[in-house]
Length: 630
Image (cartoon, rainbow, N blue to C red):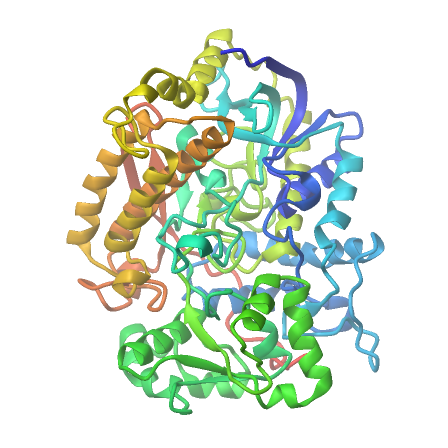
């Protein structure tokens, strides 16, 4: 094929993905590496890429330590209870102790942050959230990263990591292709920071047909953070910990600002409060430690998100749906009504458009809520991602192997969705993790750990053939299409994605089966996944755009396979409301108060699963009672 090969050599730090994690990495890498060559490779355009591409109305992770609001320990406790105990407290604390400085940088760069007129502090939406005018959030942050990098390669779909041939298990860069020109790009680097995206669209979405792209998490997040690392042999953790979200129906508009700022609440179709009726039975499933409404009421400790989902799912199954968000009261106040609309116009325009198109005015009609299909992305409120080293001053020996945020592959670091065990990082926390990873990557290079890297032409040529194989498959067999897009010799990316989503939904606990699975279903699903994996060797792409879709599908497949193995391995129901193991419906702290860790052998594709100890480094009791900060 006639695509040019473009080699970018002598890179010190390669940043893969330029969302908030990647931009944080590029910005901080320049500070610690004044003379280092820093290169960014981004699938879209850095100015409007990642999960906050179309804007955000709140920064969801800010301590406010300078205002006497919260300490990092408080945030660890909050994330720990929300994740039913399953977090890496060293990584969480490390992020939380640095995140405020990130937010102060954003404000210096021009991000408008709303202020409390009485106190001068940032205006709180909730205990951890501050309100912003965030339509241009990403361009503001991206500009700082662009100034820090030597080169930014936009429109590059990174497909594989390059591995060093002088030393086993050491990274040596990455390869991919330009989604506009088709050119082959080779990046040779001493260290790689993976800031690529988590996985939406691995489970069958509720929105189909013309609404297929209307999912909650960024639809272009194709699991590349996981696919790249899993394929290279990095250890992963907590990949069973998918998230299901309560969202406004069909438009997937977020509900946080409504609950926290507008003080709205939910009720069933008949105007009744329903949550509390499900708590007694749920308490038997998870125990009082995780669900004690009395303690939550007394200390303002939030009830874990998954358990609130459980109440919604069961109320709907009992025939008392739909669940409504009560907006009619709040929207009588013109100021709150304006905030309610602005919240979507600056972040999720589709929700405002949908309400207008379907004649729903939240001032006169309470809109419907629903639960989403599951997503796998470690920066929001789940703990999935790579098994990474923590910081030297905090981490127990099992969590530390030399450099902060380094995966089990030498020289490969993670940020944002890529890092496992750090839920509730969101945008500011992802940027902060990028900064932490970059500082460590600079030290890794300065310590001489990246000396003598060797990448052969044979490895580069092998990856090139792999990348363009779907185009070749189409060219050879396209004349054998029997009807529409049916061909006995290949499948196209859309057909492959439909199969993957159906498998994940029906066997791995998607919305279509009320998030229910068991060991029998998971084993059948893994068998069918193996067949799909074989068929993906015959995926065909008719053009460069389909080639992009083919590689997104392959990354989604690797992510999904990992989710299957982890869900089977964790022999309990740890997060009712996210998924249920019907054969093991109770939370089992005696046997499963541990983190799960997996590794896929790059040569054989075989999975090895293990338990890792779960250390609680932060005490249970806050030094001062939690208060609502507004």
